[in-house]
Image (cartoon, rainbow, N blue to C red; front, side, top):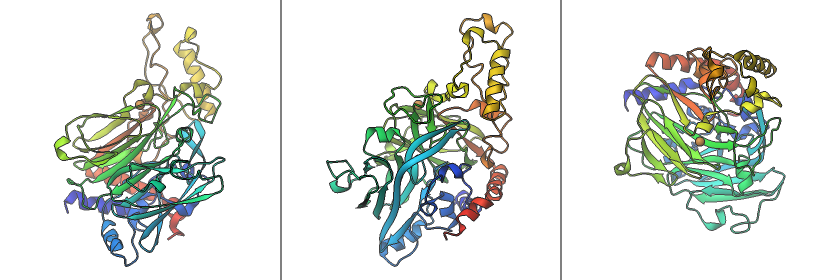
Length: 457
Ligand SMILES: [Cu+2]
């Protein structure tokens, strides 16, 4: 075991339960016993996603796999399981979910177990998996296992492979996972997909991937059309004003942490109406896998932007060589924005009178109603008004550091949040001392979160 890898496991023990600053959102209406965070898995306080009890041979292998690293889905919890003999049993509940996607915007999405996207399911290649699904939506639905090679009866297509699951009904899916890779589950109904009904299904490989990584993170890319003064996504829309990573828009996305010199894996999954070119700053990565599993090393080539098409997963890996807060974002310009219209409510900044004083006055009064402190640090030229095209970005920035503060944001430059919007997060590549400092902050910041889950153990 390399020094870096050993340190990772030490870190995992320190991390504690408080990975998420958004716990109250994640758990709104969720049966607590069915959701847990990846770090709780690593801490060993709860059922591991790999299984940890029972004498079955598959179990013995699973115990070994407890030491493998689960993927972390920032801002989304993992789904716990129980064992029935050698079968891993998950309980998934499809239901309406309130999701705070930005400090001033909460939407009525649909998801699973109180979470949108749904909680992450992590299994081991070779596992027998049972998912007891309960439909608490107001209409029929089903669950499709995207990318998995399973019997047709488990495919989750209404009328074709099963009867739709009616509201209030349960349906049991059961199959053996013979593949490895980054898969997902979703309702097999277009409008329900656009309401948010998707979640990760990760199958960890029988034989470790080479090279091994020190950090493994997953993102689900989603887009939403939610008009100002509205909370319900327009699932028939062709244009989108809210873009999210794991159900939150920057700057609410929880920054990723990586120790300087470590190897990082990102799994990026897209379910929406657009394809997203996801770009990493300051480093080159290689695509090591797709929604079909691990890609042969002969296909790896250096890049820093990967196009993640609808219904695709792209797995990339890189060495975190350079210290700093490096952006990871969709590069479509309009996907690097939040909907300013929401902050304006029923008003707009009048472009005919776009003086800084007037625009700022409106921003300040609206920010107070949210409430957050709006900081606008970027100066404009004295003759800005006379330049055709002005303004473009001048009044777009929304500094709100305090509102989105969490241990992972500690030490970022003042007003960092003004530089982050839409489908965007950052990976903070940190030297040992800074990295450990944030880990200990996470640990001490989360006693209530630890307390909250202790009774389940
Ligand atoms: Cu995009």
